[in-house]
Image (tube, rainbow, N blue to C red; front, side, top):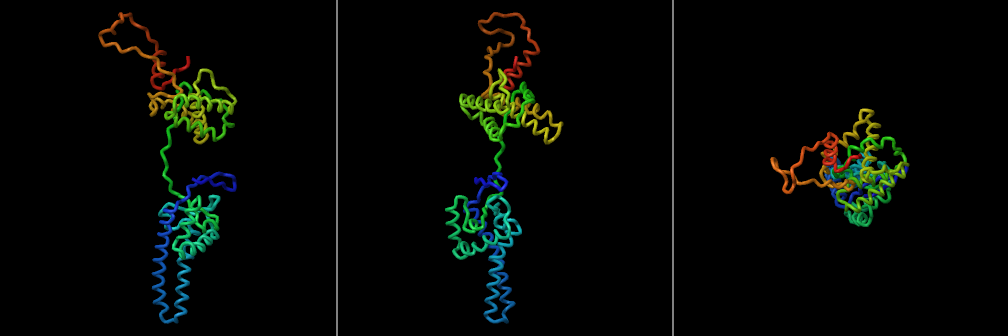
Length: 322
């Protein structure tokens, strides 16, 4: 992947086309151009049969220049860098700054292409593309252009686990304007890959990210909140604000809904880096009997709060605050 910087200081990540795909695109373009040239040449031979040899030669040269040189230049100019072969292979010619090419770029590419592609049967273009870091031939170097891939396979987006429900909306007053984009990216990468990290390494990384977020927001991490859960809650708050900004107040419950979906997420029931270890449970007692070595006891009163806390602990892996 190549990083280009535009005139507005915006970094663009483009995938330069490599030699095999470019060679296939050139072969397709040449096949169409040669077929058109042969058709026109046969028509010219029939139309200029009554003329002398010099006129026939001049008409053949004019047809060659128009179809094999002027044709690709016109096509790339009108299509903004996408010839028939490039469209078939998912390629496009762009400027060095990522913008669309113009006539002067296509003209330089076409004129130099006559030498490095037609006269040398593509040998010079292949050598230049292999030597260049971004796969550029001489025409691209002199024209200030680059052939990039337009069709890039999109990988499935990684799942970012939401925070436990008891942290949803707790950081609605945080000032997130000072948090840089690279820190958000680091936090997202941690959340999507935390299942692959060693528990100790993940714990240290979560503490460092939480400290960075606390320093940027000006609010320390609340006491008793695990670092990983704090990071996830702050990310959820940012997503909720962006949803409200994009869709209005009707998206106010997006963050809460995401947190509620934590129980049915792919990570439900698995150990989280910030999860509190589960409380050991005694072995089940057979129905109608009692556990070996345990004397029967009277009925135990269980409150509704205890049942709700048990369900939260079992579904999320987090122990709710007291």
